[in-house]
Structure formats: C-alpha cells, structure tokens
Length: 137
Length: 353
Image (cartoon, rainbow over all chains, first blue to last red; front, side):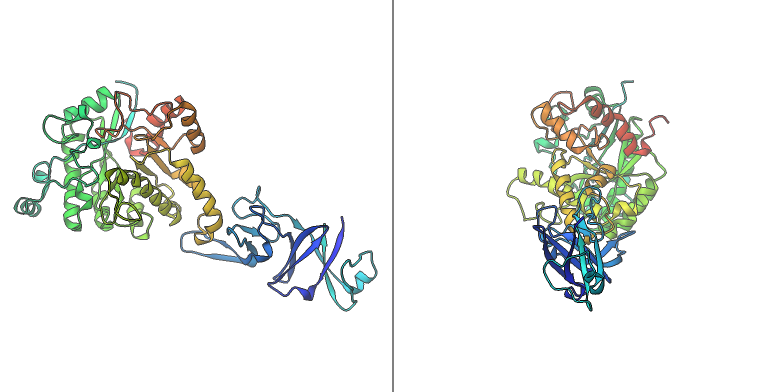
C-alpha cells in the first residue's frame, strides 16, 4: 500500500474539497464534520466529477411528510443525475451493494511525525508545525 | 361447474337514470330526474353506440350492450368460460359535478346492481361505484356496502378530478384497506380536464391511447405520495389500462427515482418493486406483440407472476372469438391470472363460501 501526502489539512476548509492526482487518478478529498474522506473523483454512472457534487444530509423518512436528516454534509449528490453516495464508504443510496464509488483510507499526520519518515511528500514541502492529509492507495 | 376462472372486468350497463335507476332513487332525486329530464349519463369515454363499447355479437336487439342480464350471462360465462365475474358499472354517476347528485346516483347504481344482478346470479360480484370527487361521501357509500361481500372493490375512473395519490383521498383508502377492498381504477374520464396532459386531442383514437398516460400518472402519484406506506394492505387494480407499456414504465420510474428520490425520501425502494407488490392489471386489452417471444420478453420484464388478472372486458370489443386470454401468454401466468391472483387481489371474493 502506497501512502501519499496530498494536502495540508488547512488547504481544505470544512465543507470543502480538493482534487489531487495520485498515480494518474483524480482523487477528491472532502473535509466534513471534522473528518477527511477520499474518493475516486468519478461518478460510477457517467463519470461526473464528484468534486462538483452537493454535500448533503443523509435523508430518510418513516412516513410521508416526515424528513429525518442525519450525518449532515456526508452524502454526495452527483451534479449530473442526482445519484447519492455515502462519502464514508462510497455506497450509493439506491443500491449500496452494487453501485459504489471507490474510496481510499485517509489518515491525518502532523508534520513532526512525517519528518521522521517513512513517508515522503511528493508534491510539496512538509513543515513540522502543520498537519497533513495522507491518502492510502 | 367449469374450472375456476374469475373475470375481473365486465360491464353491465345502466339503461338510464329515469328508467333503470328510478326505483333506487329517493323521492327528491326521483322528482329531479323526472322533472329535469336527467337521463343518458353515459360517460363520454364510452358512448354506447361506439363499436368499442359493444362487440357486434354482444349487442342486444334493444338497449345498450351489457344491459341484458341473460345476454351477459351467455357471453361472459357460457361463451368466454368464466366461472365468476366482477361487474364494473361505467355510467356517468361518478362524473356528475353536483356531489350530492353524484352520491345519490352512485348509491342507486350499487342498489340496482345488488338487486338485479348480484341477487340473480351468484357467480357475479361487483365494484362499489363511489363519488370520488367528494371523499367523505365516497366513504359513506363504501361503509354502506362493507357488510356485503358481493362487493369486492372500489371503482374509480382513471381521469377524475385530481391525482389519486393526493392526501385528500387518503381517508377513502383507509376505509378500503380496512374492508379488504382494492381500489379498481378503470379507464374513463370525468372530463374535468383534457384527457391528454398537452390538451384536447382531435380524435377518439388519441384519447384512448392517452388513457395509458393517465394510468401511469396515477400509479406514480399513488407511489410517490406514499399511499402504500400509509396503507400497506391496499392493492390497486388497473382496468382496461393495457399491459405491455408496463416494463418500460417500470424502468423509467426506477431510473428517475435514483436521481430525485430526495423529493420523496419515504420511498426507500425501487418504484417497480412497489408496483409488483401493490399494482395489478387486467388482461384486456394486453396490447401484445405479435409473437410468442415478444410476449415472453414482456412477462420476463414485468418479473412477477402476481400482477396480471384475467378479464374479458365484456362487452367491450377488445378481441374477436371466444378466447379472452391474450395469445402466447405462458401457461403458468394464465393459471395464476385466472384464479390465484384474483383471489389474492380481491380477498372478499371468498369463492369457497
């Protein structure tokens, strides 16, 4: 498993995202509710860029007219056809077992740890006073 | 008796308001229909003289097709081989604007069919005709018939005053579910609006095909508004809707739901799955492809052997000859649609009793 330092945590504000190129793939990293999630930046339906997706609540309902919102901001709604995906596991809402977006594990490390290795910053300088988003592929 | 074969859609005809129904009206409405010459309230959707409204060999010498009990018995039972048949009266009572007049005429129709048809032939059952434009009065009529198991469903028109999923109809469905009465939606319009969503067609033919759009709109309305979540025991029967449009409609409903389900988060599974559980269709007309392979494909695509209900649509002219079963249907489907599916869909049929 390769580990890639892809961003300073401060590069991605809460509710925002950043697209990074890793081994020829576009991976999109979201920052929501204090966590970072990395997914292939491509809807499995028609290939829409998911960095343009709306970050919405997980919406369920026990009966008509009752709207239950949870995990606000953690669901992606594709900009092209509205398919919803769970950032945490990439599963689609309508067919979670069969239709999903590829996800990648994310860890956050501080610069001091990174400076000791074994990680290598591929694209930018690592400062001990910052923290970093690391995507595993 | 012949093997069980339940015909879920035949059409006895009301001769007229001032004749057939007069004995079943109260004094006020008797006076009104006589003094105001209210008669001939046949639905514009089914003018009695139109060829579709009555096959030539099923037209009595005098009166409307479907108006003669003995002739209906010969046609539906002796000729077409049904063992039981459900009478769906298509007269204009449901289309009357005055809700009280509509309710009085619906009640008269139900009293008439009970006394002059159901009481004359134990093989007959009937749908309750209701003034759906006034849901509280429709409920009164359903309650009036609830104790009589010869009434097995609630009949409404495909094109009424508003889409059937809307909340103001829900009290009707609560009562229908309570009494094990499926909602039978039959082709026909109350002509509150143009039969096509674009406007008025120039030709009869256009109207008749636009009916399938109305059925589709009703199915989506019932599903999307959440009727089957509120009333999980409710079944809906599409009558004279045609069948072969269903697979493409299911696919499109599923596909679109994936992208817009946030509008209706209470719909948490594919619309086609809900259709398979709650929607039933009668098999005349079927609008079959010409070959067995084409029919088999449609059956595979519908992917349920529980949705189809045998019907002849007597005396409507949907086919010639003595066989009301559409050609090329697989034997397993035929046996289910003639017996098991009607018995499951209309629990009040109770043939054993």
